[in-house]
Amino acid sequence: MGSVIEILDEKTVNKIAAGEVIERPLSVVKELVENSIDAGATSISVELKGGGIDFIRVTDNGSGIAADYVKKAFLPHATSKIHSADDLFSVRSLGFRGEALSTIAAVCQTEIITKTKDRMTALSYRIDGGKEVSFDEIGAPDGTTFIARNLFFHTPARRKFLKTAMTEAGYVTGFMQHMAINYADIAFKYIINNVNKLVTTGNGDRRENIYKVYGREIADSILEFEAEDLGMSLRGYAAKPVVARSSREYEIFFVNGHFIKDKLLEKAVEEAYKPYLMQHRFPFCVLVLNIDPGLVDVNVHPKKTEMKFAHGPELFEFVRRAVGECLSNTELINKAGLVEEPEEKYTAPKVSAEPFEVLRTVKDGSRTLFVAEDRTSDDPGKDNTEDAGDSFFYEQNDGISEIEEKPAFLEKKDTAFTGKKPVQLDLFEEKIIKPENKPYFRLVGQVFKTYWIIEYKNKMFIIDQHAAHEKVMYERFVKQYKSRNVTSQLLSPTLILTLNGKQEMILERYMESFRSLGFEIEHFEGADYAVRAVPSGFMMLESREIFTGLIDELGDGINTEDVEIIHDRLAQMSCKAAVKGNTELSFKEADELLTELLSLENPYNCPHGRPTMIEFTERELEKKFKRIV
Ligand code: ADP
Ligand code: MG
Image (cartoon, rainbow, N blue to C red; front, side):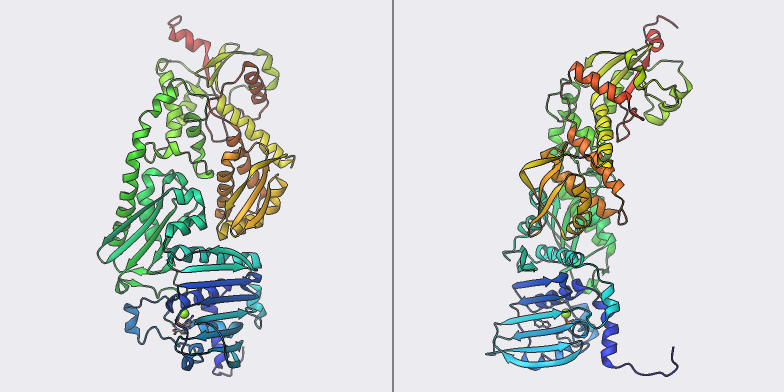
């Protein structure tokens, strides 16, 4: 380090300052699009090449910059939006620091073409790395076009921090999707490498844009609501809890035009959804808030993705109540349908998959997207799945609950498991469940189209065919995936998935793994991907959920590069997909199932921890019948 102190030249200062605002193509796009919005544009197009590292073009039909101010706009701290610090309390524009143009111009090769209505011609102004190159009069329509080429071209160190073009584009895509939803009255066109990625009409319909970005399933389940109180107004788009996600990514907040991440708002929304969601499940919910600018501070973060609220507790309550009321109004309808459900479960179940099995497979909650409609209509906040299964057992068990003597291991298991008898088999017992013992197992028959009774020496087992089937399938899939011994099954029709920017990134990152596991996936158009084939065992109906669920999960655990995780998830999901509820099993099939179960290392629990079988001893029955005392 030298000892001579010098004043840094302007160019250097700009570069330093730029570090705060401009760190990647996304930052450039964000600043430019916000400028376009501030300029009153009703139509904005954004174009990227090379992930925005090579080329970004933002075109708007806004006010344009008056000829006298074109150069001035590129000076540090040049802004037309505020005049003094006091204005910060009433600022309604998205920008106000006057930093963007000067910093962007310092870190890439820029050209602005801008025309105000009152002039015949447009002006083109080019700057390379902060140095003026040209200033010409040219022909162009009203509005402004901004081109940024070769981001960080003369600062290779900074450029090194950029990720692949694909990843950088993914970030921009996420931003554009949010903008499209937030600003539904602006017609956006978003183009990557000459391909239209997202095109909106600007007709003001947010739901339409939610559909374009997040697809049909979510858009169809959106509940729209409005609220107003204490200088705050809110438009909400809350998805029904059935489409719950495994990350907070879909809790989307816009405050005074800015997309923000905010713990208080997240908490308020989650609090409202709490009765309807399992743990570790998060809602899809878009909130568009308008708050008196005097009561929020946007100036806490250079990227304006955080805010300070003057009346936090009031805001929290306002949001919680608005979302909560929207959901509870809806919930009433669902509850009505639920009343009959237990009946269905306990009496003759139909051959179709629902409702019992669908509910049961949901147990694994946080790990999959199998959120069955039935579940959300159930008792709020409870995993009624398990309840349903258990209460079934309880009913059966009540009669034998006075068994006095029992082995210590059963006692222990009792409390650990359900506190009810009979109990799950225990691993500490001498292992009965092994292939060599198969000849001693006598399959007696099936009850309730679900449970198989099996006699083994002086014991009676009851096997839950679904749990057992799931377990067997799970193990089979794990083995298959591990050995890459997977056969594909063509989907007809092809499944089209609409992914958001982050999901696209994740999909691209794991594409090879997916392919090697039997998926055939291709980019289709825009944010759409075509899934043409899936590993056999997947059911067409559920492929969509399986897939997006898996992608979201992979995205959640940032360092889950491990393919093992994909194996495990796929196995879990595919076994769920493969196992159908309440289907009748022939004797022969049940026998095969039993054989396969016996061969497993841990046949006692299904992949979600529920028991596959329970046991009664002859002695217990004798006691029950008072044959012995
Ligand atoms: P800020 O947005 O914080 O004011 P910027 O550096 O982003 O600062 O922009 C400087 C000024 O240039 C803005 O205040 C605005 O007057 C003008 N400007 C920038 N982009 C546009 C645009 N697309 N249309 C019209 N005016 C613009
Ligand atoms: Mg700006």
